Image (cartoon, rainbow, N blue to C red; front, side, top):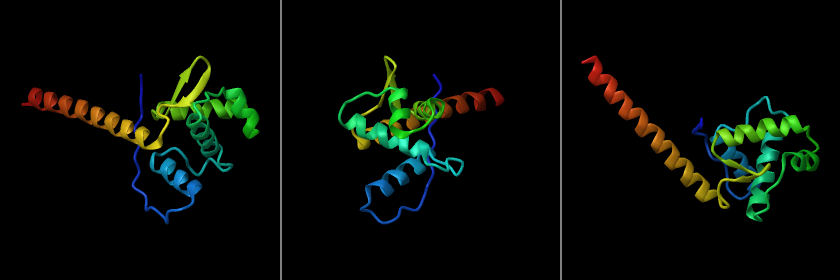
Amino acid sequence: MVQRVTIIKLRHGSAGDVNQELQWLGNSLGLFNLRDRDSSCFRVFITMVKRTRKNEPISSDEIAEQLKLSRGTVVHHLTKLIDAGLIIRERERYLLREQHLQKLIQDIRRDAETILQDMENLAREIDLQLG
């Protein structure tokens, strides 16, 4: 399984607006970019946050219908969120990996630490081979 952990250090604006906070969180994870002019990835992410909080998995067709996006666009963004380690797929339905965002970030931290430890171990082995 390929998993991408992206972390971008961004200046954090003023707190208080949940949508701005979620946008900052997603931007910090490298999820949203300038090509996403209609904020479709952000909208898919928000949908997933809301549905997961209620423990209600959702299908790509339901997301597409709810957000008035093509199914292809939704699947593209869901795949991106899966690759980032945020979304899981169970029986053709999707949920965030964790019900609470704080737990989700803790999981991502552990994932990043595991990846970095594997890289460090490999680097040590390469150094030994190179003398």
